[in-house]
Amino acid sequence: MTKPSRTALFSATRMWDWKAVAALCAAAPELVEASDPQGHTALHRACAVKPGSSAALLESNGIATVKALLGAGADLERAVPMDEDEGDFRATPLWYAVARGENFPLVEFLLEQGANASYSLWAAVWRDDEQVCRALLKARPELNLKAHGETPLFYAARLKRLATLAMLIDAGADPSIADPKGRDSVAIARERKLPAGIIEEMESLQRKLHKRRL
View 1: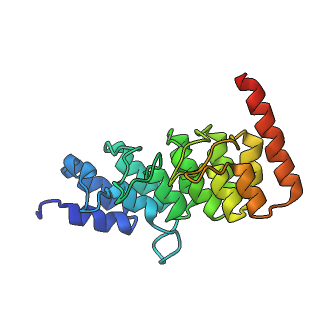
View 2: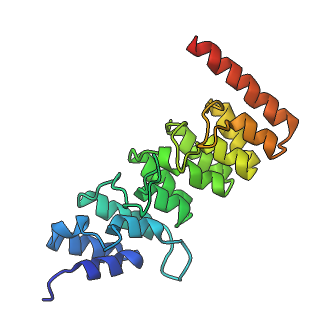
């Protein structure tokens, strides 16, 4: 019998062949933590697959594949190393499901397993995806982390992603946190000429949070 290899596991993972994934992990448990030169594990690769990109890539095969990997001991929060300083951002399996796989059922499953939603907010904002943002916020993420010096709220205001911006305001994200140029979310909202009602909501939230800190 051919010895199980990382290549075989990654190939089965990309095809969401969950039975082969389970068998390979059972035969060689150490493979579940093996990574490619960029730092991706089989779990990252499974989460990055886009459902429907081929006839075989249909849910629930993706969730079954991820279940097999987690059952074999895959780290739910393992982050892929970045080439540059990303600040607080971490490229976790959940982020891959949100940003690369665009796989909402898998996103829900990972959140049910306790995945940290904090690092995926920027990806939800990028697509202005209300469904994903709602699921992430329900998991009570840290709202005020920074990636490239920008909180998700600032990022949403700068990109004019109005749906997710409104959700982050409602969740209580802090508009006072400045980017590396010293601009807070209210300032960037004015600069980007966002609707007056949104700016007023941000200013109101800013005042409310300021009072709490006194």
